[in-house]
Amino acid sequence: MKKVSIVVPTYKEADNIPVLVERIEKSFFRSSYSYEIIFVDDNSDDGSKETVDMLSKLYPVQIHVRENVRGLSSAVLKGFQLATGDVYICMDADLSHPPEKAVQMCDVIFQNDADFVVGSRNLPGGSADSFSLYRRLNAFVSRVLALPLKKISDPMAGFFAFPAKLYTSDLVERLNPVGWKIGLEILVKMNPEKVIELPIVFADRMYGESKLTLREQWNYLLHLKRLYCYKYKVLARFLVFGAVGATGVIVDIGIQILLIRFFDLQFVYARIASILCAMSSNYMLNRFITFEERPPQRLITAYFSFVAICSVGALGNWLLSVYLVSTAGFHYIPATLCGILVGMVFNFVGSSVFVFKNDKLKQKQHKEKEKTTEVNTVDEIL
Ligand SMILES: Nc1nc2c(ncn2[C@@H]2O[C@H](COP(=O)(O)OP(=O)(O)OP(=O)(O)O)[C@@H](O)[C@H]2O)c(=O)[nH]1
Ligand SMILES: [Mg+2]
Image 1: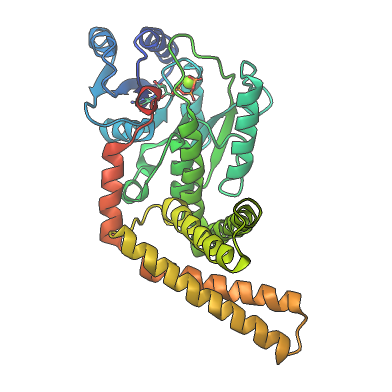
Image 2: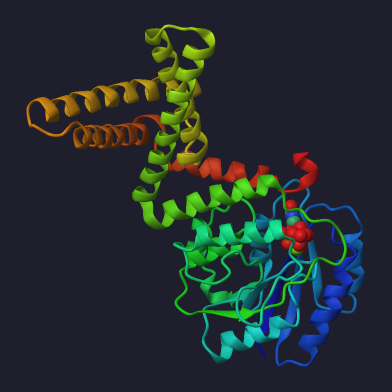
Protein backbone atom coordinates (compact mmCIF):
# COMPACT_ATOMS: atom_id res chain seq x y z
CA MET A 1 0.00 0.00 0.00
CA LYS A 2 1.38 3.38 -1.01
CA LYS A 3 1.79 5.95 1.72
CA VAL A 4 1.04 9.64 1.34
CA SER A 5 2.62 12.37 3.49
CA ILE A 6 0.47 15.46 3.83
CA VAL A 7 2.42 18.46 5.05
CA VAL A 8 0.42 21.31 6.54
CA PRO A 9 2.11 24.52 7.70
CA THR A 10 0.18 26.13 10.52
CA TYR A 11 0.16 29.36 12.37
CA LYS A 12 -2.77 29.89 14.74
CA GLU A 13 -5.05 27.37 13.10
CA ALA A 14 -6.24 25.44 16.18
CA ASP A 15 -9.91 25.68 15.17
CA ASN A 16 -9.30 24.40 11.65
CA ILE A 17 -7.11 21.42 12.53
CA PRO A 18 -9.78 18.94 13.75
CA VAL A 19 -12.03 19.65 10.76
CA LEU A 20 -9.14 19.20 8.34
CA VAL A 21 -8.05 15.91 9.93
CA GLU A 22 -11.62 14.56 9.89
CA ARG A 23 -12.03 15.38 6.20
CA ILE A 24 -8.68 13.86 5.23
CA GLU A 25 -9.41 10.72 7.23
CA LYS A 26 -12.80 10.37 5.62
CA SER A 27 -11.48 10.58 2.07
CA PHE A 28 -8.41 8.40 2.62
CA PHE A 29 -10.43 5.78 4.47
CA ARG A 30 -12.20 5.00 1.20
CA SER A 31 -8.97 5.03 -0.85
CA SER A 32 -6.19 2.54 -1.44
CA TYR A 33 -3.57 4.73 0.27
CA SER A 34 -2.36 5.04 3.80
CA TYR A 35 -1.44 8.53 4.96
CA GLU A 36 0.29 10.65 7.56
CA ILE A 37 -0.32 14.30 8.33
CA ILE A 38 2.61 16.40 9.45
CA PHE A 39 1.73 19.79 10.90
CA VAL A 40 4.62 22.21 11.11
CA ASP A 41 3.66 24.93 13.52
CA ASP A 42 5.58 28.07 14.41
CA ASN A 43 4.85 28.22 18.07
CA SER A 44 1.23 29.36 17.63
CA ASP A 45 0.56 28.76 21.29
CA ASP A 46 -3.19 28.62 20.64
CA GLY A 47 -3.78 25.00 21.53
CA SER A 48 -2.72 23.61 18.14
CA LYS A 49 -0.13 21.33 19.68
CA GLU A 50 -2.52 19.98 22.30
CA THR A 51 -5.20 19.44 19.63
CA VAL A 52 -2.87 17.44 17.37
CA ASP A 53 -1.48 15.45 20.30
CA MET A 54 -5.02 14.47 21.20
CA LEU A 55 -5.93 13.63 17.60
CA SER A 56 -2.76 11.53 17.26
CA LYS A 57 -4.38 8.93 19.53
CA LEU A 58 -6.93 8.26 16.80
CA TYR A 59 -5.27 9.31 13.54
CA PRO A 60 -1.78 9.18 11.97
CA VAL A 61 -1.01 12.82 12.71
CA GLN A 62 1.95 14.57 14.28
CA ILE A 63 2.96 18.14 14.93
CA HIS A 64 6.42 19.61 14.82
CA VAL A 65 6.62 22.93 16.68
CA ARG A 66 9.41 25.32 15.75
CA GLU A 67 10.22 27.71 18.54
CA ASN A 68 12.57 30.20 16.93
CA VAL A 69 11.90 30.04 13.22
CA ARG A 70 9.02 31.64 11.42
CA GLY A 71 7.92 31.26 7.83
CA LEU A 72 5.55 29.31 5.66
CA SER A 73 8.04 28.08 3.05
CA SER A 74 10.62 26.86 5.51
CA ALA A 75 7.82 25.16 7.50
CA VAL A 76 6.78 23.23 4.39
CA LEU A 77 10.37 22.20 3.72
CA LYS A 78 10.70 21.05 7.32
CA GLY A 79 7.59 18.94 6.84
CA PHE A 80 9.02 17.30 3.70
CA GLN A 81 12.17 16.58 5.64
CA LEU A 82 10.14 14.68 8.25
CA ALA A 83 7.90 12.92 5.71
CA THR A 84 8.18 9.18 5.15
CA GLY A 85 5.61 8.58 2.39
CA ASP A 86 5.89 7.76 -1.32
CA VAL A 87 4.12 10.97 -2.26
CA TYR A 88 4.37 14.39 -0.62
CA ILE A 89 1.41 16.76 -0.61
CA CYS A 90 1.34 20.32 0.67
CA MET A 91 -1.90 22.01 1.67
CA ASP A 92 -3.12 24.90 3.83
CA ALA A 93 -4.74 24.26 7.16
CA ASP A 94 -7.60 26.70 6.68
CA LEU A 95 -9.69 24.39 4.45
CA SER A 96 -9.23 26.64 1.43
CA HIS A 97 -7.86 23.59 -0.35
CA PRO A 98 -10.46 20.82 -0.57
CA PRO A 99 -8.79 17.94 1.34
CA GLU A 100 -10.84 15.43 -0.69
CA LYS A 101 -8.77 16.30 -3.79
CA ALA A 102 -5.65 14.84 -2.19
CA VAL A 103 -6.65 11.28 -3.12
CA GLN A 104 -7.25 12.29 -6.72
CA MET A 105 -3.83 13.95 -6.82
CA CYS A 106 -2.23 10.66 -5.75
CA ASP A 107 -4.20 8.77 -8.40
CA VAL A 108 -2.86 11.11 -11.04
CA ILE A 109 0.69 10.48 -9.81
CA PHE A 110 0.39 6.70 -9.71
CA GLN A 111 -1.92 6.07 -12.65
CA ASN A 112 -0.86 8.84 -15.03
CA ASP A 113 2.81 8.92 -14.08
CA ALA A 114 2.63 12.61 -13.20
CA ASP A 115 5.76 14.17 -11.72
CA PHE A 116 3.96 17.12 -10.21
CA VAL A 117 0.27 17.80 -9.59
CA VAL A 118 -1.10 21.26 -8.93
CA GLY A 119 -4.53 22.10 -7.50
CA SER A 120 -5.51 24.96 -9.80
CA ARG A 121 -8.17 27.61 -9.28
CA ASN A 122 -7.90 28.76 -12.87
CA LEU A 123 -9.07 25.75 -14.86
CA PRO A 124 -12.63 25.07 -16.00
CA GLY A 125 -14.30 23.48 -13.00
CA GLY A 126 -12.05 25.29 -10.55
CA SER A 127 -12.65 28.68 -8.99
CA ALA A 128 -11.86 31.20 -6.36
CA ASP A 129 -15.23 32.92 -6.42
CA SER A 130 -15.04 34.09 -2.87
CA PHE A 131 -12.01 36.26 -3.59
CA SER A 132 -12.45 40.01 -3.30
CA LEU A 133 -11.77 42.12 -6.40
CA TYR A 134 -8.47 43.28 -4.93
CA ARG A 135 -7.30 39.72 -4.34
CA ARG A 136 -8.38 38.66 -7.79
CA LEU A 137 -6.49 41.48 -9.44
CA ASN A 138 -3.52 40.71 -7.26
CA ALA A 139 -3.68 37.04 -8.24
CA PHE A 140 -3.94 37.94 -11.93
CA VAL A 141 -0.89 40.22 -11.93
CA SER A 142 1.10 37.71 -9.87
CA ARG A 143 0.19 34.98 -12.30
CA VAL A 144 1.21 36.94 -15.38
CA LEU A 145 4.55 37.82 -13.79
CA ALA A 146 5.26 34.15 -13.14
CA LEU A 147 4.30 32.92 -16.61
CA PRO A 148 7.81 32.91 -18.15
CA LEU A 149 8.97 30.71 -15.30
CA LYS A 150 6.47 27.91 -15.74
CA LYS A 151 3.54 27.64 -18.08
CA ILE A 152 0.80 26.51 -15.75
CA SER A 153 -2.58 28.05 -15.03
CA ASP A 154 -2.01 28.56 -11.30
CA PRO A 155 1.66 29.17 -10.49
CA MET A 156 0.66 30.62 -7.12
CA ALA A 157 -0.91 27.40 -5.91
CA GLY A 158 -0.22 26.26 -2.38
CA PHE A 159 -1.87 22.89 -2.97
CA PHE A 160 0.47 20.52 -4.81
CA ALA A 161 1.83 16.99 -4.79
CA PHE A 162 4.80 15.08 -6.20
CA PRO A 163 6.50 11.69 -5.81
CA ALA A 164 8.90 11.61 -2.88
CA LYS A 165 11.70 10.26 -5.05
CA LEU A 166 11.91 13.57 -6.90
CA TYR A 167 12.66 15.42 -3.68
CA THR A 168 16.40 14.80 -3.86
CA SER A 169 19.12 16.21 -1.64
CA ASP A 170 20.47 18.05 -4.68
CA LEU A 171 17.11 19.81 -5.04
CA VAL A 172 16.96 20.65 -1.34
CA GLU A 173 20.43 22.26 -1.62
CA ARG A 174 19.17 24.57 -4.38
CA LEU A 175 15.94 25.66 -2.68
CA ASN A 176 16.14 29.22 -1.44
CA PRO A 177 12.63 30.56 -1.06
CA VAL A 178 11.67 33.99 0.19
CA GLY A 179 8.05 34.40 1.10
CA TRP A 180 5.19 32.08 0.46
CA LYS A 181 5.36 30.57 -2.97
CA ILE A 182 7.17 27.37 -2.16
CA GLY A 183 5.21 25.43 -4.80
CA LEU A 184 6.53 27.68 -7.57
CA GLU A 185 10.06 27.42 -6.19
CA ILE A 186 9.95 23.62 -6.23
CA LEU A 187 8.39 23.56 -9.69
CA VAL A 188 11.07 25.78 -11.19
CA LYS A 189 13.99 24.05 -9.51
CA MET A 190 12.76 20.47 -9.77
CA ASN A 191 11.71 21.12 -13.38
CA PRO A 192 9.44 18.04 -13.48
CA GLU A 193 8.63 16.58 -16.88
CA LYS A 194 4.97 15.81 -16.54
CA VAL A 195 2.98 18.46 -14.70
CA ILE A 196 -0.76 17.90 -14.38
CA GLU A 197 -3.21 20.44 -13.01
CA LEU A 198 -6.49 19.53 -11.37
CA PRO A 199 -9.24 22.08 -10.95
CA ILE A 200 -10.07 22.96 -7.35
CA VAL A 201 -12.72 25.17 -5.86
CA PHE A 202 -10.84 27.40 -3.49
CA ALA A 203 -12.87 28.21 -0.38
CA ASP A 204 -12.51 31.15 1.98
CA ARG A 205 -10.85 30.20 5.24
CA MET A 206 -13.33 28.97 7.85
CA TYR A 207 -11.72 30.17 11.06
CA GLY A 208 -8.81 32.41 11.93
CA GLU A 209 -7.11 35.30 10.23
CA SER A 210 -5.32 35.66 6.94
CA LYS A 211 -1.58 36.17 7.08
CA LEU A 212 -1.28 37.60 3.57
CA THR A 213 0.41 40.97 4.00
CA LEU A 214 1.95 43.72 1.91
CA ARG A 215 5.29 42.41 3.00
CA GLU A 216 4.39 39.12 1.37
CA GLN A 217 3.67 40.87 -1.89
CA TRP A 218 7.11 42.44 -1.79
CA ASN A 219 8.64 39.06 -0.93
CA TYR A 220 6.84 37.60 -3.90
CA LEU A 221 8.52 40.06 -6.26
CA LEU A 222 11.87 39.29 -4.69
CA HIS A 223 11.15 35.61 -5.02
CA LEU A 224 10.32 36.00 -8.70
CA LYS A 225 13.57 37.87 -9.22
CA ARG A 226 15.48 35.00 -7.65
CA LEU A 227 13.70 32.43 -9.77
CA TYR A 228 14.28 34.46 -12.95
CA CYS A 229 17.98 34.71 -12.08
CA TYR A 230 17.98 30.97 -11.41
CA LYS A 231 16.37 30.17 -14.72
CA TYR A 232 17.67 32.88 -17.03
CA LYS A 233 20.90 33.52 -15.14
CA VAL A 234 22.97 36.60 -16.01
CA LEU A 235 20.47 37.88 -18.57
CA ALA A 236 17.73 38.23 -15.92
CA ARG A 237 20.05 39.98 -13.50
CA PHE A 238 21.24 42.32 -16.23
CA LEU A 239 17.63 43.28 -17.02
CA VAL A 240 16.92 43.99 -13.36
CA PHE A 241 20.12 46.07 -13.25
CA GLY A 242 18.90 47.94 -16.32
CA ALA A 243 15.49 48.56 -14.73
CA VAL A 244 17.22 49.96 -11.66
CA GLY A 245 19.30 52.15 -13.97
CA ALA A 246 16.08 53.45 -15.53
CA THR A 247 14.75 54.45 -12.11
CA GLY A 248 18.08 56.26 -11.63
CA VAL A 249 17.30 58.43 -14.66
CA ILE A 250 13.97 59.39 -13.09
CA VAL A 251 15.64 60.22 -9.77
CA ASP A 252 18.32 62.23 -11.56
CA ILE A 253 15.82 64.35 -13.53
CA GLY A 254 13.39 64.65 -10.60
CA ILE A 255 15.98 65.87 -8.11
CA GLN A 256 17.42 68.26 -10.64
CA ILE A 257 14.05 69.87 -11.32
CA LEU A 258 13.38 70.06 -7.58
CA LEU A 259 16.68 71.75 -6.79
CA ILE A 260 16.52 74.25 -9.64
CA ARG A 261 12.81 75.12 -9.35
CA PHE A 262 12.30 75.13 -5.61
CA PHE A 263 15.77 75.72 -4.18
CA ASP A 264 17.08 78.05 -6.86
CA LEU A 265 20.29 76.08 -7.12
CA GLN A 266 22.54 76.74 -10.08
CA PHE A 267 22.47 74.10 -12.77
CA VAL A 268 26.12 73.07 -12.22
CA TYR A 269 25.54 72.27 -8.53
CA ALA A 270 22.08 70.81 -9.05
CA ARG A 271 23.63 68.45 -11.56
CA ILE A 272 26.24 67.22 -9.06
CA ALA A 273 23.60 66.66 -6.38
CA SER A 274 21.14 64.90 -8.66
CA ILE A 275 23.80 62.58 -10.11
CA LEU A 276 24.91 61.66 -6.59
CA CYS A 277 21.31 61.01 -5.53
CA ALA A 278 20.72 58.81 -8.58
CA MET A 279 23.90 56.85 -7.92
CA SER A 280 22.94 56.39 -4.28
CA SER A 281 19.42 55.23 -5.08
CA ASN A 282 20.83 52.89 -7.73
CA TYR A 283 23.26 51.51 -5.20
CA MET A 284 20.50 50.88 -2.65
CA LEU A 285 18.16 49.26 -5.18
CA ASN A 286 20.94 47.05 -6.49
CA ARG A 287 21.92 46.17 -2.95
CA PHE A 288 18.35 45.23 -1.93
CA ILE A 289 16.99 43.89 -5.21
CA THR A 290 19.45 43.07 -8.02
CA PHE A 291 22.15 41.55 -5.82
CA GLU A 292 20.05 41.05 -2.72
CA GLU A 293 21.37 37.57 -2.02
CA ARG A 294 24.99 38.82 -2.09
CA PRO A 295 25.16 41.57 0.54
CA PRO A 296 28.63 43.18 0.64
CA GLN A 297 30.53 42.98 3.93
CA ARG A 298 31.50 46.64 4.17
CA LEU A 299 28.62 48.85 3.14
CA ILE A 300 30.52 52.14 2.87
CA THR A 301 33.45 50.70 0.94
CA ALA A 302 31.01 48.94 -1.37
CA TYR A 303 29.14 52.21 -1.91
CA PHE A 304 32.28 54.06 -2.92
CA SER A 305 33.43 51.30 -5.24
CA PHE A 306 29.98 51.33 -6.85
CA VAL A 307 30.19 55.11 -7.36
CA ALA A 308 33.72 54.75 -8.77
CA ILE A 309 32.67 52.03 -11.21
CA CYS A 310 29.62 53.99 -12.35
CA SER A 311 31.75 57.09 -12.86
CA VAL A 312 34.16 55.18 -15.08
CA GLY A 313 31.12 53.68 -16.87
CA ALA A 314 29.70 57.17 -17.42
CA LEU A 315 33.03 58.39 -18.81
CA GLY A 316 33.13 55.39 -21.17
CA ASN A 317 29.54 56.12 -22.19
CA TRP A 318 30.45 59.74 -22.97
CA LEU A 319 33.67 58.91 -24.83
CA LEU A 320 32.05 56.25 -27.00
CA SER A 321 29.03 58.35 -27.96
CA VAL A 322 31.21 61.37 -28.77
CA TYR A 323 33.51 59.18 -30.84
CA LEU A 324 30.60 57.62 -32.74
CA VAL A 325 29.14 61.03 -33.60
CA SER A 326 32.33 62.94 -34.37
CA THR A 327 34.45 60.26 -35.99
CA ALA A 328 32.19 57.44 -37.13
CA GLY A 329 29.44 59.73 -38.43
CA PHE A 330 26.59 58.24 -36.34
CA HIS A 331 23.35 60.09 -35.68
CA TYR A 332 23.43 61.28 -32.07
CA ILE A 333 20.52 59.07 -30.92
CA PRO A 334 22.01 55.66 -31.87
CA ALA A 335 25.37 56.95 -30.65
CA THR A 336 23.83 57.80 -27.26
CA LEU A 337 22.10 54.41 -27.06
CA CYS A 338 25.39 52.62 -27.83
CA GLY A 339 27.10 54.67 -25.15
CA ILE A 340 24.40 53.84 -22.59
CA LEU A 341 24.52 50.13 -23.41
CA VAL A 342 28.28 49.87 -23.19
CA GLY A 343 28.33 51.95 -19.97
CA MET A 344 25.65 49.74 -18.48
CA VAL A 345 27.46 46.52 -19.35
CA PHE A 346 30.61 47.96 -17.80
CA ASN A 347 28.74 48.99 -14.63
CA PHE A 348 27.05 45.62 -14.41
CA VAL A 349 30.23 43.60 -14.78
CA GLY A 350 32.10 45.89 -12.38
CA SER A 351 29.30 45.70 -9.78
CA SER A 352 29.08 41.91 -10.08
CA VAL A 353 32.81 41.40 -9.76
CA PHE A 354 33.93 44.12 -7.33
CA VAL A 355 30.94 45.41 -5.35
CA PHE A 356 28.49 42.54 -4.92
CA LYS A 357 30.94 39.67 -5.17
CA ASN A 358 29.67 36.21 -5.98
CA ASP A 359 31.23 34.53 -2.94
CA LYS A 360 29.57 31.12 -2.65
CA LEU A 361 30.55 30.60 0.99
CA LYS A 362 29.20 33.98 2.11
CA GLN A 363 26.01 33.39 0.12
CA LYS A 364 25.53 30.08 1.88
CA GLN A 365 25.98 31.79 5.24
CA HIS A 366 23.53 34.49 4.20
CA LYS A 367 21.01 31.82 3.14
CA GLU A 368 21.31 30.08 6.50
CA LYS A 369 20.84 33.37 8.33
CA GLU A 370 17.81 34.16 6.21
CA LYS A 371 16.23 30.82 7.07
CA THR A 372 16.37 31.50 10.79
CA THR A 373 15.17 35.08 10.61
CA GLU A 374 12.36 34.67 8.09
CA VAL A 375 9.38 36.73 9.15
CA ASN A 376 6.03 36.17 7.57
CA THR A 377 3.24 36.83 9.90
CA VAL A 378 1.27 39.95 10.35
CA ASP A 379 1.88 40.35 14.08
CA GLU A 380 5.64 40.51 13.60
CA ILE A 381 5.44 43.02 10.82
CA LEU A 382 3.13 45.45 12.54
N1 LIG B 1 4.32 27.30 10.06
C1 LIG B 1 3.81 28.43 9.55
N2 LIG B 1 2.66 28.40 8.88
C2 LIG B 1 2.17 29.57 8.40
C3 LIG B 1 2.83 30.81 8.60
N3 LIG B 1 2.07 31.78 8.03
C4 LIG B 1 1.00 31.17 7.49
N4 LIG B 1 1.05 29.83 7.71
C5 LIG B 1 0.10 28.80 7.29
O1 LIG B 1 0.16 28.74 5.89
C6 LIG B 1 -1.14 28.51 5.34
C7 LIG B 1 -1.52 29.65 4.40
O2 LIG B 1 -1.68 30.85 5.14
P1 LIG B 1 -2.98 31.78 5.02
O3 LIG B 1 -2.97 32.76 6.13
O4 LIG B 1 -4.19 30.93 4.89
O5 LIG B 1 -2.67 32.56 3.69
P2 LIG B 1 -3.61 32.74 2.44
O6 LIG B 1 -4.22 31.42 2.10
O7 LIG B 1 -2.80 33.40 1.41
O8 LIG B 1 -4.68 33.77 2.97
P3 LIG B 1 -6.21 33.51 3.50
O9 LIG B 1 -6.67 32.20 2.95
O10 LIG B 1 -6.99 34.68 3.06
O11 LIG B 1 -6.14 33.44 4.96
C8 LIG B 1 -2.07 28.37 6.52
O12 LIG B 1 -2.18 27.00 6.85
C9 LIG B 1 -1.33 29.11 7.63
O13 LIG B 1 -1.66 28.65 8.91
C10 LIG B 1 4.05 30.82 9.34
O14 LIG B 1 4.67 31.82 9.56
N5 LIG B 1 4.49 29.61 9.79
MG1 LIG C 1 -5.52 30.42 3.24
